[in-house]
Length: 406
Ligand SMILES: Cc1ncc(COP(=O)(O)O)c(C=O)c1O
Image (cartoon, rainbow, N blue to C red; front, side, top):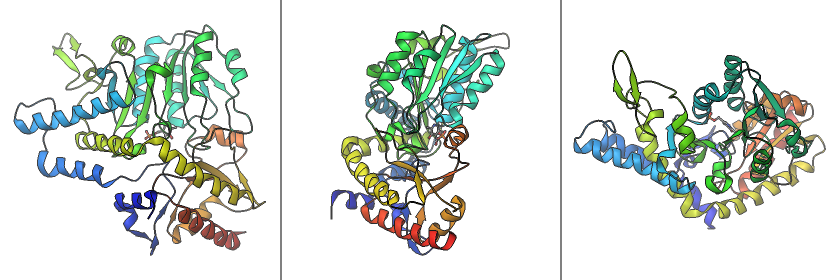
């Protein structure tokens, strides 16, 4: 058995069937499956350690707090933040971006200022900035993409002005799998403006090693559940001096220093942004996800998934009824396609009968759908637990469904 066949055994979800067939899970851009070690860590908290963190001094709480804070240490090291308190736990990418749009957006945006986004963005990197812009009477500008789904960098310099206060963009497109030239984008932004830079790493975190100091982004956000961790976990990284200058997002327990009816003073970082009881079990589980992937190494995973992606792309390209969107010159193993005359929803429903799970729809990227000239796509997202056999089963099922539907 080769290394990646063995990997399947780490993921209990793959032991079960879907509609009587072996599960072929090709929806990892929506959420990844969780390895046993993550599930065991979550169970251990509920079976042996249930209590609140940061509050009580009994020994259960002390142990849970240590485990919870160890995840912060792990992420601090994994993304090479300068200070551990620059790592804020949230519920996910969406909450991290809403936090930024409120606490940063409301703090730095003024009338007629601009927020620059890209045509590739997920709705959660559009709508919070629109809401902030409406509150502050600022404007949204958009960096377009070319027909291969790549950002048009020549346009970037023209779009940046002294009014550009925030640029927020994704490292990897969740719909097309385009790997954006993040370093180059940041270099141009720094050269042409004083804008603050937010990097949406929701898809990037599972694909490439991230060093926030080397990238020199001001903020970075991602979700734990797209990185083999539990749902309900997310991260906001921010440069310390910027986080310190921002007002809190949510008010409540843990984020305060002193409260009176007249005035409240706030806790230090990271707690200023972590109001209320957090997703304790899930954050503890996320530590195991980081350890699991670090043990294997992202370059090894990339080699495996890139190979499967190429096999899939070549097979789909052989069929002239199929349009593969993009692909870009630097591509993650996420592939969006449409079949002439076939409804994506019908396709997904039929292949699900064969145990194959893919995602169809607009993938929370309606502006991108408009640019592609479609209302939805079918999307295959490959991960480390997929194999060549999975691609074969998918293709067989797709061809069968296509015969029925077209
Ligand atoms: C690029 C990107 N940004 C943001 C999000 C939102 O993530 P979440 O739903 O985990 O908050 C997603 C989820 O698909 C995504 O792929």
